[in-house]
Structure formats: structure tokens, C-alpha cells
Image (cartoon, rainbow, N blue to C red):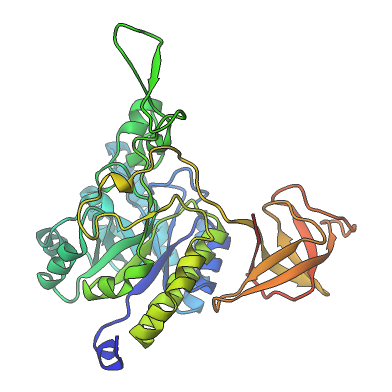
Amino acid sequence: MDNNTSNKINKPELLIPASSLEVLKVAVKYGADAVYIGGEMFGLRAKAKNFSMEDMKEGIEFAHKYGKKVYVTANITAHNADLEGVKEYFLELKEIKPDALIISDPGVFDIAKSVVPEIDIHISTQANNVNYGTYNFWEKMGATRVVSARELSLKEIKEIRQNISPKMEIETFIHGAMCISYSGRCLLSNYFTGRDANLGACTHPCRWKYYVMEESRPGEYLPVFENERGTYIFNSKDLCMIEYIPEIVDAGIDSLKIEGRMKTALYVATVARTYRKAIDDYFESEEKYRSNMDYYKDEISKCTYRQFTTGFFFGKPTHETQIYDSNTYVREYTYLGLVNDFEDDYCIIEQRNKFCVGDTVEIMKKDGSNLTTRVVGMKDEYGKECDSCPHPKKKVYVKFDAMPEMLDIIRIKE
């Protein structure tokens, strides 16, 4: 992209998920323009930690302090019994002023328009948004943004852009897990476990291992396999579009969305800063973007993932988009903790995985660099010197031979 072109095209928003207040702060530090979060009710990630109203208020204030936005998910398929609670929930949100609500259900949409007309409404991918008529409909209803279905190609998204108002925003998933079912509307979890994906309680049966049984041979389970371990017949590779920022920008997408409201701070930091750098490099010059491609690909593979695919963006996926022999994530680095504070020359960390004095670790910096350092000292939460921190979620005081900054991520290579 040359400078003349970059001046004519708006840089798309980088939209990052957050499972907790801590992760929201990491997302803001590592490059998010906006963060989407779920409260304790009416979102589609019941297993995520989610935000209390107090944490949501603090998170919104933190993001706004740095000029970033926060969107709150309320995208369940609501039943009659949910509607009164939705109204009460929106009245609470009215006080803490999120920048938008993400909604799929028309009844919930109607309540939002009535109760919080001052808050923008974004239409969730759960609403199956696959054509420009749908976008135009939701604009007439008062929505400001529609999230495209994952089943759309870039060609289709570009056609939508050409047939809707410039004011209507398009948000599109460009990285993260892919769902087996159309726009995430899956019934497997409800059928197998009684936990409804469309009410936020998905157990991800698409990742389970399956066998078939012949009718006349009860109890004899035959693996559907590529090898002797069985098969994961619904298991998609993860979406990754880091190599196609020019095509995404050309399609007219306004917000580039990362999947993962149940992911760790390490995942969020890694993906946010890598896409942040790729987008910024491209808008500086296409040559710079192309020259840094190996860096982006190397960095993005350092967070947990299940191999990569481009999904539906360049046409319908083939068998190569699926993983048949495993549901195992690839993990090159382990998340050790986040720097929360300092005391003298020690960093205070709520540790996530075990590490020891003498270990060589990496400090992730928001500018895209990684600082290799050694753990030279450690004290437990009571100030007693120790050699390791074996218990997750414990506060630990750590001295490195290079000093991190607040909210730096500490990780170690597997």
C-alpha cells in the first residue's frame, strides 16, 4: 500500500477478546483498538470467567482512559424467562457506559433500543448475516454494525460493502477457533450434555473423539480413523489471516475481530501485538508489511493453536481444513504470569505455571520485541525466599536480570 492509498482508506479497528479485567488491560496495552467482553449474564460464553459489574466498570474506565472502546456481548438466543432479566441488565449497563452491545436476538435488540438508546448496537454473527439485504435491514432498525457470518468469502464481503451505506460498519472474524455449525448455531452440546451452545454453555463436542457402531454388533465400537488413534471428525483448524491484511482491507471491513473470550492473557497479548504490527506496517507501506511476514508468522505460532486455515475467505473449505487425527493444540510457549506491581527490585506476579530460579524466560514487550532474561531470585507471598513457584494463582515476587514493565507478559519456551 502506498501513502496515497493509505490516506484514502480508513485503518480497520483491531478488536480483541477479554475473559477478565486483567486480560482486558493486557489487550489494551498490546494493541487493541477495542475489546469485547461478557458480563455474568446473557453472553454466549458461560464457561468464560466473565466480568462482574464492578470489573466491567473498571475495565471500561481503563479502556476509555487510553482512547479504546469496550463492547459487551448480550448475544444469547433469549427465551421468555430471559427478557425481564435482560431489561434489568441493560439498565445496569446504562450506568457504566460501554461503547456498544453485541446482540443477535430481535427481542433483546428491541429491549436495548428502548432501555439504552444511547448505546450503539452491533448485530452478532449468531444472527446469520450473509447478505447486504440483512445489513440494510439492521441499519433501518438502528444498528450501527453487523458482524459477518464466518461462512462468507472476501468476495461476498466486498459485495456487501458496495451495497450498504458507508456508515454501516462490517465486523469480521479474522483469527481463532472455527465452529462446526453454521455461524455457531450448534445443537450438539445440548443434545449430548443438556448444555445449550445458544445459551452460552457449549461443551465443544466438535472436539471430541468419535466412533461408529454397527447395528448388529452392539458394544463393538469401530473407530472412524486416519490412523489407529481414531478421528476428530468435526475438528476444524484455527482461522489465521495474518498473511492477507491487504485483501481484508480491500474488502472494506471496518473491524478485524479475534476469537477467544476463554483464552489466556498470553494468547491475547501474542495475537493482539502481532496483528497490531501487521496492520500498522501495512498502512505504512505494503513493502514493509511483506518484508516482516516471517516475523508475523513466527510470532502468531507462539500462542496456543490447532494448525491454521483461511476458512471460507477464499471459497468453501476442503478436507484439508479439518484435523482428523488429533484435537491437540500446538503450544510452543507456556504462560508464566503478568507483571502486576513492583517492590524494590522484585516484580510482583500472580503466577500461572511453575518456573524456577535459574530459568531463562522471555518478557513480551508491547512494541513486538521479546527480551530474554533469567530468573535470579524469588520470594513467596510472605516474603520467604524460594527456588520455585509450583502452585498456580499464587502471588510471587520475582527478580529478573532485566527489569520488566507493568503488564508485561512472562513466558517460557516449551
